[in-house]
Length: 413
Image (cartoon, rainbow, N blue to C red; front, top):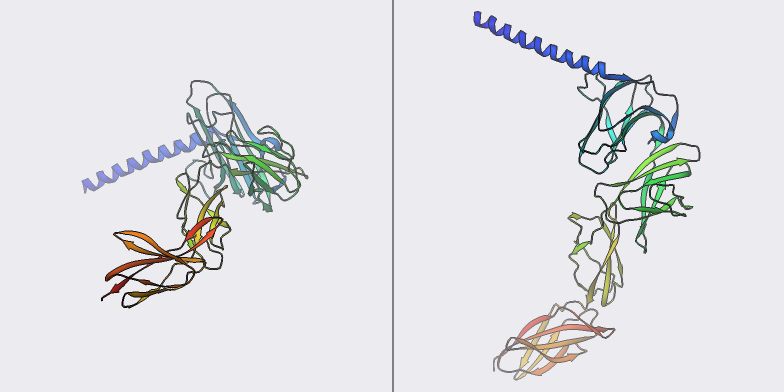
């Protein structure tokens, strides 16, 4: 009984200590939280809010090398709101920094509820959507581990979004002969101004050529060209669009690394009288399998055909491989022997203009006769003689030979 009482006392003591620790964490979070103003009443027709240009920044703090703060804000209704935040002027594309921005619905910063990051990129920017009615807590943390001091800025903004929102998107159109890639902006209203901040070493061109990061004028189809060079594999193209009504949106298109495609599995094909193609190809860009579609040139008649492996989806570019279309394989061959004479016959080869008959002499094939017919009579020696016959056709002074049929003739007397 005494042991039981002692055990209960120990458990109660542990419980009290844990409770004190939890209360302490609640207090610390609540004290460090900085309340910001309620969300202003305005609507955007686009889902991505450019907080800096729009002037709807809810919080902004400048610092040098370290930063840690908790903000809180309250949404008064259940309209769709999006939260955008990030660090600017940081040590971009360096791993000498640590940063974290998270959103909580609990003042203890213990859990996140129904909050999904819908955008996160290399500029240390992220966006949560969509937020409903309630109070939210944003924890921001940044540490620059480099010796050189860098002037930084943290910003956070909130925007109300129309329920009929459509995202501004960028779609791949084509790869041009001058090695540029054409993209098209898909927006709700006609774009008035487009800001393009490209990934490493890239540049953009529209109807007018501008320096990377400046305004780009789109053509009548809302298209612009992009020149790819060696890219950071995690880099992207950040595009801000301001339409005729003054609404702004932001979207991203991933930049691509340039690889020489590796194509395995291209095989010669038999002539069929119809278009022939390739299947089961292994296509890789770098180490990764590439998505692709195939197109052809001169892939019907006997001769040299070309297959074009064209990138699709996130793979752009094209590579061409050639293969030969040859007369079809001879599937059957027979012989009739009468005395020293033998009559050889074989099935037709589609696409063949002539047939080449060969005889095996001491392990080597020797030509016997080139024929236009599918039979031939000749003198054979006693014993077994091995023959081979295949169809052939000449195109542009090049011979295209089909797969042959090997058979044995046995003269007994």
